[in-house]
Image 1 (tube, one colour):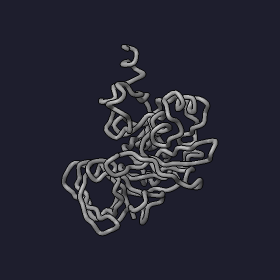
Image 2 (cartoon, helix red, strand yellow):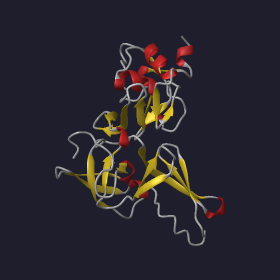
Image 3 (tube, one colour):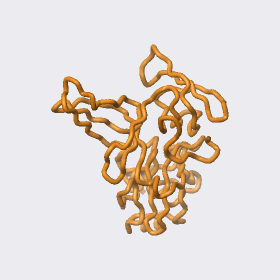
Length: 252
């Protein structure tokens, strides 16, 4: 039994609350591998296949489906059943041609939303940090662990650096290039990725000043006219004027 409590498994009651696992029926559940998303904002691929999509009834069946290369995440076949899947990842079922995007949903934190094929070729990534690297070029550190290099022609006047932290880039999954950029600003549509308002889609009305960047208060209004507040770190911009991705039904 010690083996199950090691690196391959975790106790069910210790798993994040949004994992749809039977905590009373089973003592152990699968543990995520180190990867692009933290454990508190991700779910193992096995649980996605078995419990979110329903392609399998047991862990063994789900592991076989994954090991046979039937699941792509962001365009790449993933055979590690512990691979962490998180916000904005695109899931493809190879044999059926079905696509899903991982989105924040009310109370459950993470959910899968069916999307059309044309939307499966890109994903939205939030800029968590940016640094200047050798040659004066700019490196963007994205929420899913990716790093994107922005080359500048003149380090003394980096006009190519139009990107700010907590802004969102639309990233091609075919070549990894940035297609569009959506800054964090008043008037932008956004989805809430944490806290009691998780999963709500709304327009940014006002961003407060005078406090630490990530803890700034943000006033938003959902598309039914209901206003609410959250902190800047929980806001994920979805476009310039309207969301560029499909959002959960009823969100608009």
